[in-house]
Amino acid sequence: LAPNEHQKLFTNLFYNDALILKELGGLHHRVGDIKNINELINVCEEAQADIVFHLAAQPLVQQSYIDPLDTWMVNVQGSLHLLEALKHSINKKTAVVIITTDKVYKNNNWDFGYRETDSLGGHDPYSASKAAAEIAIASWRSSFCGTEKGQTSQLLISTARAGNVVGGGDWSPNRIFPDVVRAIQNKESIQLRNPNSSRPWQHVLEPLSGYLQLAEKMFRYGDQYCQAYNFGPDIKSCRSVKDLTEEILTHCHGSWIDASSNAPHEAARLHLNSDKSFNHLGWQPRWSFEKTIEATINWYLKAYNGHNVVQCCMHDISDFVSPS
Image (cartoon, rainbow, N blue to C red; front, side):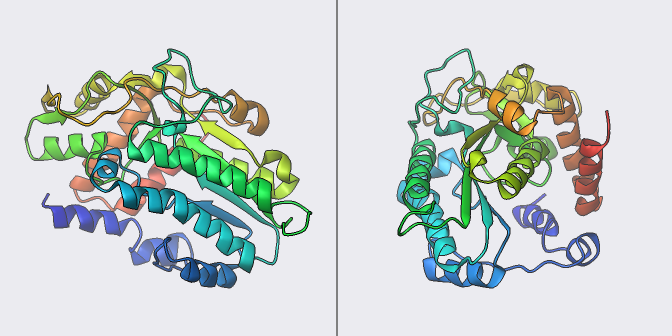
């Protein structure tokens, strides 16, 4: 499909009246810029939310090389803008889950998974900005959350670090799944930037379920859960980009080739240890690597064949939450 058709499919996920009015029963929606703190304060004052999920970000490694300053501004300053806005406008207990990334860790290309206590770092601007956000959020929480003078006991703040998520509805450039799907649909060769790089692939519903569990725990039981948590897949789902592409191709026809070696630096190996989330929250991944890829490629194939994308999402959610 042409780019505008991709955008049309994407917007159906959110701007579809059937989703807003029928599936969810109504939704208040505001579009704004997280770099505008005054606008954030107004929104937070209006909402008086019990739970806040912060996912606004510049999320692409490649884009962070193109515009590093905006990446840092959105990912670090934007997160602090939200916390400052909440501090000044919330008059009730509010649990805040801030989503960062698995790339916040100083990458040593270890064979074992990174734990929440491992050192933070980042080579590319995206990873570094997210690591910096983690440090800034922890500092903000220590400085302004509590019962001392100048602090608030109303805000409960945690951070969530998820693995490489895939799932239907992602049309972003320079992401492996939408890039592969576009190439297959256009009957083009699949360009892989770093085919041998290993990543912890997981369906987007996996970490989303973890975020919900974390928010509930914080809201119910307080600041003992105001920490960082990893949400990564089973070790068997840590596969190379090449493995991922070949698994996709088992469900549809296509071909792939390696990309140029001139691609900007990205970590070669990455794996999360999610024992803390299992022990503290009772969270664990549900879907295997194969199930994850099957569900994701089926979503895209259905979308390209004219299926209602909202119903495609609802089908995946029902499949995910149903007993195995």
